[in-house]
Amino acid sequence: MSKEELQTLSLFNHPGRYELIETVSSALQAIEELKKATTLGFDTETRPSFRKGEFYHVALLQLATHECCYLFRLNKIPLSAELVSLLEDEKIKKVGVGIRDDVIALQKMHKFTPSGFVDLSEITRISRSTCLSLRSLCGMYLNQRLSKGAKVTNWENPVLTDSQARYAANDAFVSLLILEKMFL
Image 1 (cartoon, helix red, strand yellow):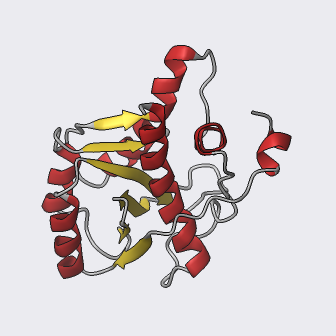
Image 2 (spheres, rainbow, N blue to C red):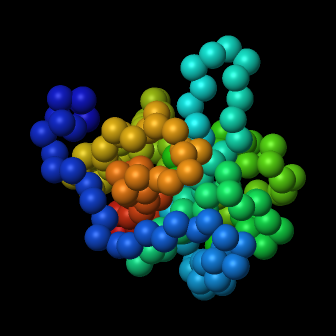
């Protein structure tokens, strides 16, 4: 699907809610809810760097069920053992695009052995010679356009804007929905 064709599609906006997780106690509650799922949408956001040698840790980890996307503010709370346990759980599938780099970035914060991750770009690569972006996959499988407007914003801001939070939640929600469409 061309960029021009993508631009003609309606904008994806999942009706599910999102929850900002900024305290250890709210993280523990969210993790308990996430453990009940068999498949989660997965993504991370990191403050962009514009200078050579500049590096930032993951600021936001998004994990979504159909009902809620939990936005873990890793610049405010640690990547805890409980959260790592979820990322290592092979029984819970974590689905997204470009997962390898996200996992490596998270491993710089806390060593863990990732398990249960499903990369949509790897699944589609089997049948195509090129790697497709999440935006392209959204157009192909959901017939909607995914906004990338907030991608290069500062994810370490003390307060995330509603626009940033909705963008982050949509990225995790859409991966979950695309996986389901692929295997219907």
